[in-house]
Image 1: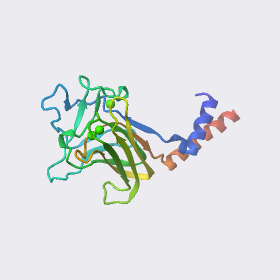
Image 2: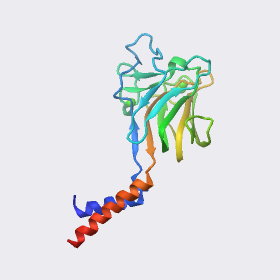
Image 3: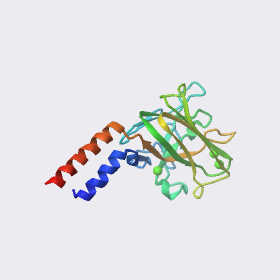
Image 4: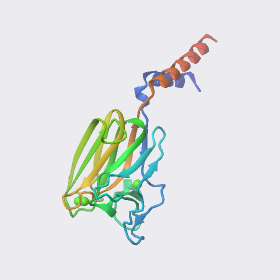
Length: 218
Ligand SMILES: [Ca+2]
Ligand SMILES: [Ca+2]
Ligand SMILES: [Ca+2]
């Protein structure tokens, strides 16, 4: 590694903040459980699903309203749409239980921010809502909220976004839909902004500075 690269790396590592890393989860690599070629179309095959990230994993679940487990699917839209081109061929689908509760994401390590994209094919007037907590569920402290009016928007041109941020987020809840169908939107492109670990960053930065000093002397 050249000295100039080392200087830049050392500066970034010492400052810590500039190193905040983002995990993108686009669902593209997972086997679909629903889609146009499946019968029934939205079987609700999943009760929990884990997304593996570089700094935090996400456990996806849904809140039960009826007492029965609330389910969801990973949707294949290869043969049906058109979905937004940036959504690829897979997304998160709650339509099996559109009268059930919000999605509940538990982060296995604290994160600084979370955002997602959502939308549907028109027909109803949708509103998206999101809540972030500092503990693994919604009995902990509320950190941030977001509301987005999708209205009469429709795929493929209209993509809604929901985003929350805070010093230490351990769970996020979200729901998007209308009064008749409270959970009636697809979700994709989860982005997780991770917490830099100040102690690790400082140690790495100091180590690099030491290497640089030694090089200058020689
Ligand atoms: Ca996707
Ligand atoms: Ca709609
Ligand atoms: Ca809808």
